[in-house]
Image (cartoon, rainbow, N blue to C red; front, side):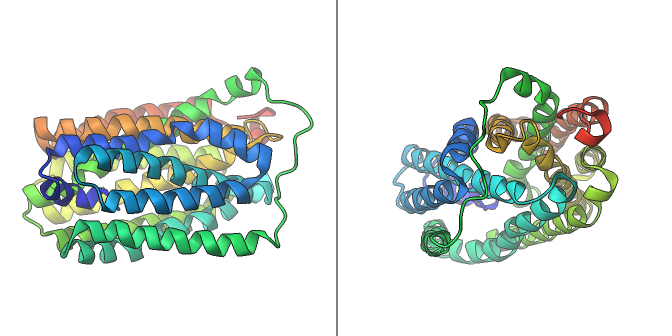
Length: 362
């Protein structure tokens, strides 16, 4: 939700776009706590971690709404980043622990339908509220998070945690065995983040779109994201997780190259952007089951390491994307995304395998 509002927030706080980009980078980089989140999930269970995350997210979002300057906004967004990571990690481990590896992409895909669905609902609302004040969008997010926290608290009282205590501790060998999966996951996340933090400004600067129109484009990107989740549910478990991730990364690279070549054409550029978003999401969803298998007795470990690496990549890309845009516009941004995405595609194709096909953990 933040990307389309970067320009509006910068104007509202009388701040430089790059400074706001740094604040967003802190939101993404806060996910570096993911390894700690994974450890905590393995210790006390996903429901409790999710409750803490939702409560913190509600507080941080409310703090962002009242930010008097970009420094306070950055602190609030960092808190929101930490808490949202807790929620996402806990939900992913919870579903992974309740599903077999053969069907895990299907079930995680169903879980991830919540993200694009939230985008489809949230972006138009945020765009409409930002016509009054961008701060109202954060107030609305805070209210939703608080309501979700209360609902989960009531639900979790009657639901046992599906994550059993591991009989042994994790080892560095299991971490090393999953490094290719983690690198590819982080690279694909960083590649698309370059584009995500820049597309709202690009649509406004180059094509003259209003905030409401940019929100409408964001709605279309939500449809693309939703399509990727549906495709993941239908085909990833059939063709294999690593194969699906390779396909997604390759298509994303082709899409951002097309965006670089057509960024002055609104319709063509927007379609290329939508395809890149969908392909990246497809690759990420296909990889999540592999992360949980890095150490099957400690699913939080692989999820935490993967999400943490991805958060670091997104944080760096949030700064890099805004900088690249100020230097050379969307062309530079898209070519940078293509280079990082190509790295991800190569790693997926050469080094990432499903456990069944190589007889070892990914």
